[in-house]
Length: 138
Image (tube, rainbow, N blue to C red; front, top):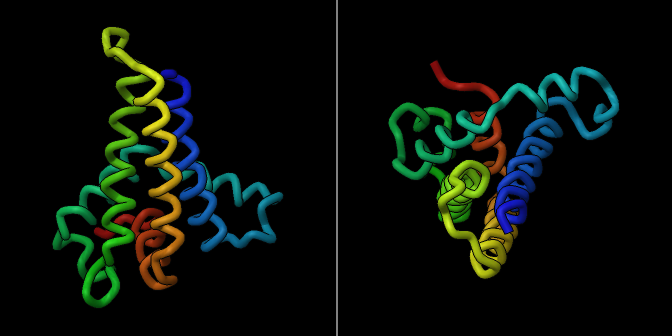
């Protein structure tokens, strides 16, 4: 059950990293060494930080967000990503936490729904989020 919770988050993480790398390197370059370099350039804390900034409507990312800010699809995706990352951490490292089948199934469903919401967001929304993920504003 712990492994299922962990895999639910990691599946979401890798789907987003693939989308980001495809955007900036291109799908046609997936077999090139620089694709892997870009793919591995973002860590889990960066994804969590950006998701929290989206959720809080941080001033730091406003200049790079779509006009009107991020839509409900991206907000829901961000909230689910943070939640899944926290559940993954507990599943992987908290030996005292009780984990059951329903929790694992809920995590899997949440990851699928989050990715579906991200994919339903319009292109401008997805591109802005992925740009902010790959290139941290200074």
